[in-house]
Image (cartoon, rainbow, N blue to C red; front, side, top):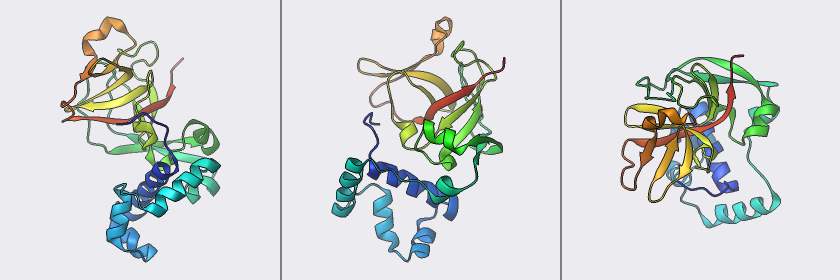
Length: 218
């Protein structure tokens, strides 16, 4: 995991993978066939094995401030429909509902989404939070918008993330620790539910995405 800002090449690869997943069912061969491109070379590109031309293009694009956006995100309808994940991430003791299935969607304005993240709408998810360890920032039953793209997986100090540890899913705030990664709840009365990740302890751990918005019941 890295904390540097995402450049054009990383943005390009993130959007290319999202397009492959949404338009070609995640199958490299189908995408390569549609583009009349060698599937082996496509696989290398998607794995981040940067060629000299891609690295050069990335440096030029970064200097020009360019980003990649899928056509439907740039010229499509005014609203994007973000899928609601069946998994209910816990802000406390974790949740075992980790099937990854979806149950409906919520509509968000595309221009508003663009102001929050460069990730395409296909890589965003809506989730409902269970537990109170992030209270009062995020309360039990609140809905959150999660960036599951490459930009959302970059750990940034003080930001809130949805993480998986073993079979449990948590919503926690990331803090840099000495020799470890810390994912803490804002409600310090529930500090016993904090998550610590040590070097070599990455098995069963992953960053699902960053919480970029939380809707609250008033």
